[in-house]
Length: 248
Image 1 (tube, rainbow, N blue to C red):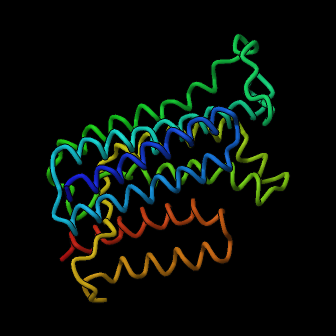
Image 2 (image 1 turned 180 degrees about the vertical axis):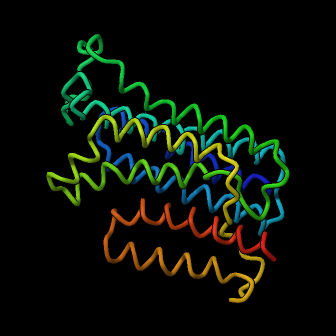
C-alpha cells in the first residue's frame, strides 16, 4: 500500500498542472502561478515520501516526469505565449475576462514561440529519465526552477508595475531572448547543485545553506523580483563551486 502514496502525491501535481493550464489559457496568470507553485510543492513531497517510505521505483520516476511536463513545461509555455500576446508585437489584445481573440491569430504567430519552452522542458525531462548520473546534482536547469522563473514575470508585472519595468518585460525582443535562454539553460551541460541534504552539517552543505538564506532574504525584501535574482544566483554559485572543485 505504501508504494502508492508517492504516486498519489505525484497525481496531485498532475491535477495542479491541469488547473494551472486552464487559468493560464484564460490569462488568469496569478492563479496559474499559484497552482504551479502548489504542483511544484507536490513534486518535492512525492520524492520525499518515496525516500522516507522506501517506495522508489521506475513507475514513480516516469510518472513524476509526466507530471512535470504539464506543471513545469506546458504551463510556462502558455504563460510565455500570453506575455507575447500582451507585447507590442503580440498581434491581439488579451482581455482577462474573455481570454484570447482567436480571430486575430492571422496577424502574428510570434506568441507561439513561447511553446519552445514546453518542447525544451519535455526534452530535458526525457533525458533526465535515462541519465543515471543526476543523483546529487543536476545537469542543466531543473524544470521547476525554470517554471518559477517564467511564472515570476506576470507576477512582477502585477505587483511591481511601473512603466520602465513593464516596457522591459513586454518588449518582444526581451521575450524572445528569455525564451531562447530558458531553452538553453534547461538543456545545457552546466552542473548545478541539488538541494538534497545527506546530513545537516554546515561544512558539508555550506553552499546549500547560503543559497537558502540568500533566497529568503531576497524574497522578503524584493518579493517577486527576487525570483530571477535567485535563479541567477543559483547558476553563478554553482559555476563558482564547479570551478573550486576543478582546481582542487
